[in-house]
Image (cartoon, rainbow, N blue to C red; front, side, top):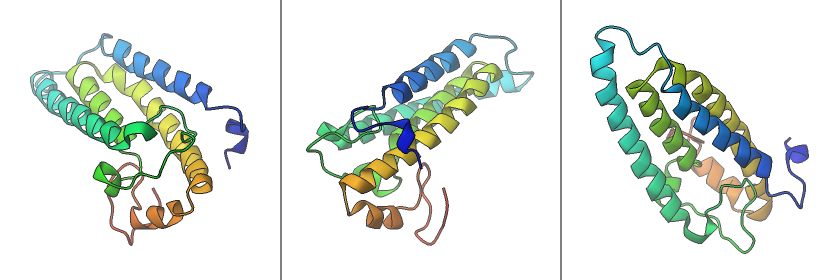
Amino acid sequence: MHESSTSAEDRGDRWVVAQFLLMLLVLAAGWLPPGWPGPADWVLPGVGAVCSLLGALVAVWAWRTLDRAATPYPRPREGGRMIDTGPYAYVRHPIYSAGLLFLAGYALATSPAALVPLVALAVLWRNKAALEEELLARCYPEYRDYRARVPGAFFPRPASASGD
């Protein structure tokens, strides 16, 4: 499916560069007008701050759970092991979920203009996650069972749910 996206020698540098550029665009767009209209201007910053804080906490939890397996690249680390504990017991890509929550909170706290690159980042992360899942399934035979046990890629969902 995504084989052409990364060869055996490629760690996935283009994916990482693209995601960091889009994250920077979200942050920069937060400074652009217009701000949120009317009453939303005083409510959304607080809601956004809570979302960003929760996103940051989940991101730290997920990264620490990965420990030595942590990498920004789609290709798993050599000699690593599959992680299915901590937030990975609930969703398969909690760092992406946390990043989306953090940046959505930032957009709510700053400017609707930040939502445009955020949508592009969400699409990029969905595609990168699909590639990661292919690579994880090749490295770890138990990944297919894990995927059936934890059906939500970015958000928790019941085991009987299908799709992402």
